[in-house]
Image 1: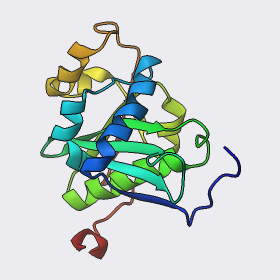
Image 2: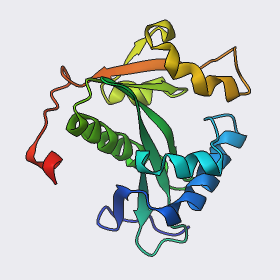
Image 3: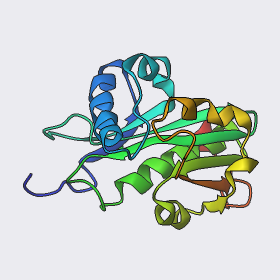
Image 4: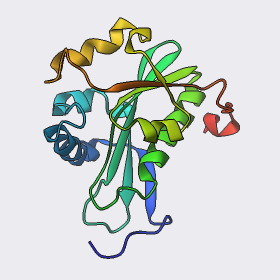
Length: 175
C-alpha cells in the first residue's frame, strides 16, 4: 500500500448514496469472517443517514472505514457496523469513527449508547463499560435473528452513559 496517509488527508463525513456499494463491500468482508453482521444493500440504503465514512484523499479505495449510529429508543442508540479496511487498522481511525458517532448522539440528546462487540478492550478504552445483554431492550435483538450465531451469541454488550462521560451539547450541534 505504500506510505500511510497523514491526518490531513483523512476525513470523516456522513455517508452519501455513492458510498453504499463500497461500504457494503467493506462490511461484507468483515461479515464473511464472522466479525460483524453483514448487511444487505437494501438495508444500507434504508439506513444511509445512520452511517459515517472515513475517506482518504487520493486513496485507492474510496471508503476505508465506516460506522453507524442506530437510534433504538428515546434515550438509547447503538454503535454498529464499525469496520476499518485492512492496512488502516491500529491507526486510531476506528476510535475517531466511534467518537464521531458519540458526538452525534450527544447532539441528538441521547443519554446512552451501546455496542455489541468482540473487541471489548477497544470500547473500554473509549469509556464503554461491560453490561449484561439482558439490560438492553428486547427491540435490540431483532437483528440477532439474522445472525448465523443466533442464539449462541458470543459478543459482549458494552454501554457508555453520555451524561457521565463529560460530553455536553455544544454550539457545534447546531451546525
